[in-house]
Image (cartoon, rainbow, N blue to C red; front, side, top):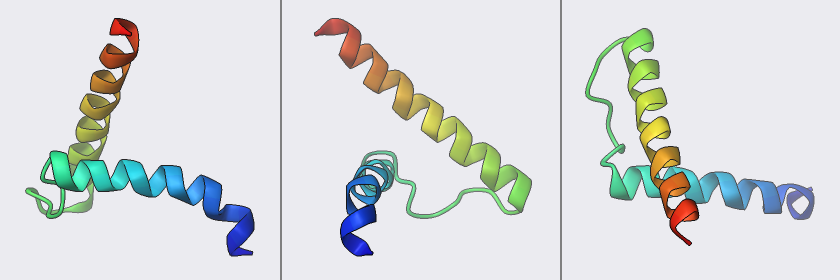
Length: 58
């Protein structure tokens, strides 16, 4: 089973690791589910915008 999902899980865990390491996302700044979700979405948006900017340059 692990062999089947490892290629997908690798990409997801790589992104989460970058968020934790590069964006300090190991702890939540805000309390509550709504604010925590908002923080994660905004962090993911900035991560994706930076990736897109690098793709456009090359």
